[in-house]
Length: 261
Ligand SMILES: *[C@@H]1O[C@H](CO)[C@@H](O)[C@H](O)[C@H]1NC(C)=O
Image 1: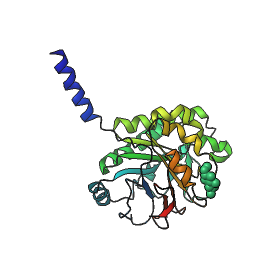
Image 2: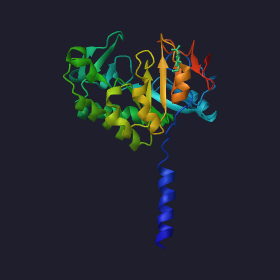
Image 3: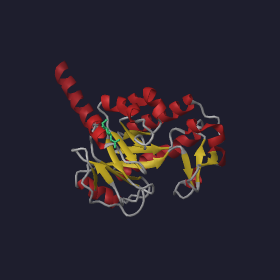
Image 4: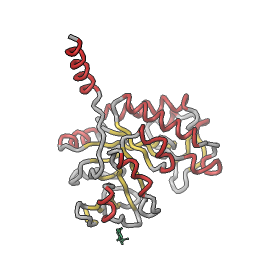
């Protein structure tokens, strides 16, 4: 009787706990602007949480793709549909090079919590498998950069908070950049999304993810990824333009060549 119960529980747990955890070498594309090009021969689409039409998500999922939904967790973007829910007290300095975007005071989880939780609800509702909360390394920009004296620990707490809220919803969560906190955050994050590790020669900092059997999704802009090494290290490397509009994209194929896709 006891063992039947246990088996029953196991079945329940495995049905409920259907968190997707991408493994190393998984292929991906990243498109945050323009009409989503649904024709890419990759396993994962990373697309904008707010802008991606539900129809497109459904279409991609019907074709067997997994969906990562991008949103900014560390900055206020004035054009978003929920922009009016951010009080002035959490808005800091402008992000360099990103008009209409301001750093958030991530210490104020009481205030930001409901806003970010609503975004995660939206991700769940739209059928995302995973989320990519961006700008989660604000503390590295200093008080002069963000307008707030954010510490390593403030950032660590906020990022863990995000992970817990995502996992409560059975959403996988990617750690975006924030390389210097991988040691503390690896256990809370299911994969990594990285920009420019080849350019800055820091791809090896991401290997703890690979060693934990978690995908590393890397994108380069001006610099080519070293595909020989990418394939060897099982890093999922692509190259794109900074506007991430789905055009002019290249990927490292299994043979270690940089090819258009
Ligand atoms: C890529 O990495 C390989 C293996 O480490 C190395 O031999 C090669 O020179 C690198 N290629 C470029 C273009 O840097």
